[in-house]
Image 1 (cartoon, one colour):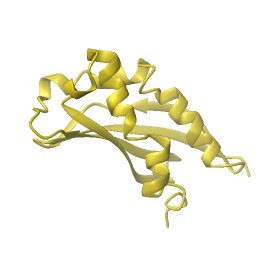
Image 2 (cartoon, rainbow, N blue to C red; image 1 turned 180 degrees about the vertical axis):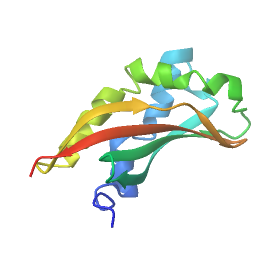
Image 3 (cartoon, rainbow, N blue to C red; image 1 turned 90 degrees about the vertical axis):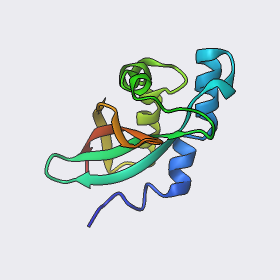
Length: 133
């Protein structure tokens, strides 16, 4: 049984990473939010008790009439890691607060971009958590 499923509801994930953040990212990047080729959605995949890691995903959904070109998304993990609008460090802090007093987020990393479909790419987010009970 996954201990964390109840923490990461669709509504809570949208609070942690609001849809508006995609628009803010492209506004900062291009000066026009409508220039962005995709919307970013945070999803929860699983908790791995073997290595005590949470597995989430930043899904990149192609916007209508835009092209989610592979060559544009493969460099995104490095960009997302340090971009202030995406703010992965802040996202980890918010997840840490969400988990309450029983768990603490430790290290995190973004994996490489994966093409799920032509209109859907994903970037894994793996967070080490420690049970402090």
